Amino acid sequence: VGNYKRTVKRIDDGHRLCNDLMNCIHERARIEKVYAQQLTEWAKRWKQLVEKGPQYGTVERAWCAFMSEAEKVSELHLEVKGSLMNEDFEKIKNWQKEAFHKQMMGGFKETKEAEDGFRKAQKPWAKKLKEVEAAKKAYHAACKEEKLAISRETNSKADPALNPEQLKKLQDKVERSKQDVLKTKEKYEKSLKELDNATPQYMENMEQVFEQCQQFEEKRLRFFREVLLEVQKHLDLS
Image (cartoon, rainbow, N blue to C red; front, side, top):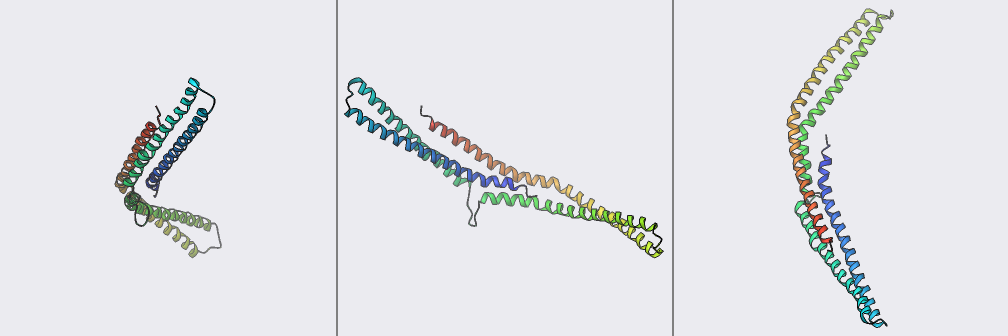
């Protein structure tokens, strides 16, 4: 009872993972931008130094080509940064908005629907399970009482101080406890049977809600795979 909460939590985890992936991409884009800026600044400074310096001819041109390459690479890394933020980041942001709907009272509509679905499916079965536990407890207590009564009666037979009336009371107690055992056992067996009869429907109802949660999670995983493949393409400088 209540173990469905792990499945419900996956929905909230899914929203958090979208945030994590966006933050991850955002940080990488920032690194790409900083690297591109550093390359440009480095190329500009060294180009001026070489042009103003004593080097001349083809070696000067080769040396300057070293800086030109940096400028080209800088442009590539700015393109990577742009793709990460304008395409990948935005794609996740929009998907998250469409997949998760915030409620006025906090939390997400999808989480509440799953929670309510599981609770509704489990409620009748959980009630019967509670009845079984109560019947089991009563039956075990009756058995314990019967054992105690039999033990007292057996011991009393060896006690000469007890009169017939006292012995009769102990025997009556044994008889009553035996009746209690039969009555509680019958109730326990009946509640077990009711629980067994309710189980197939309970399983079917729970599986329906679980399948909906599985589909939601599969949709997220499929989307994440798709985004990560696009990120891979955007990071490929070739």
